[in-house]
Image (tube, rainbow, N blue to C red; front, side):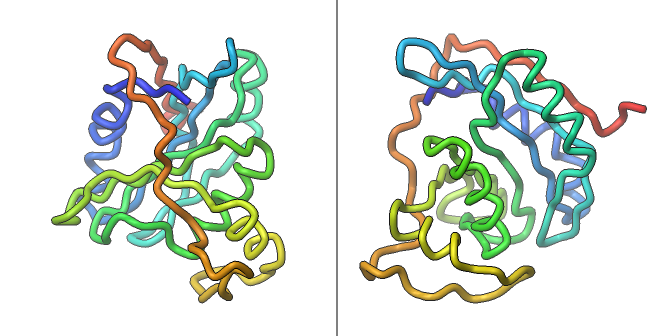
Length: 178
């Protein structure tokens, strides 16, 4: 998967007001597919409901309509942790599961501006380990997950993303749309 080197900075700017108010912001990554590679060419900022520790897109049909119109795949998501470290919470794991079920290459990007050791991470659920744990979990909200059957991690840092300085992408901000 290739992502523009500017995507995270542009998202940080779009999330600035929420981040300053300790409220999460989320976005959806739309990608085209050619020559065996996904290229993230769209960042959609959906209408959303958010708190200091969670963010949920609303009016998801708008997101799907845009992706469909542009013939793009839902290649993952990006969100902020305004006052937390750079990790995937239990709620984030369930969100990531829904993306990875549709597209195994899907990623979760976390922006954590106050984390002193890592302010940006790109993650995926391990497969089969993490995917198996999430497939069987019916809990919601913040909760602990069982160990994977192989004793490995539920998620890992994704090393297969290339930051491309020449890749163009479009931003569609639906938060102020009627």
